[in-house]
Image (tube, rainbow, N blue to C red; front, side):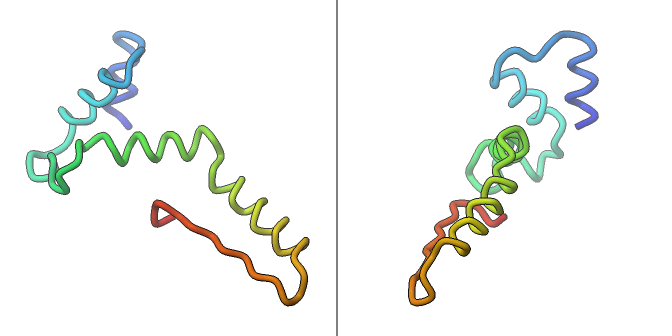
Length: 83
């Protein structure tokens, strides 16, 4: 986060490529491509979740589903991340 703030003080970050490069330069070598994915993948996911209020939306949707389902009904929730 500090590296992003520092970079933004110099110039606005206008592309995802710029953000990815800042993140990659900040991480210690051992974390780079540890999982085979670009190191900015998780940061991008976290930013998207925060900006879109995805966890709050999920909480609201689950409460609404529980309130509207019949007592013998079922709810299925699929998640593509561990949050």
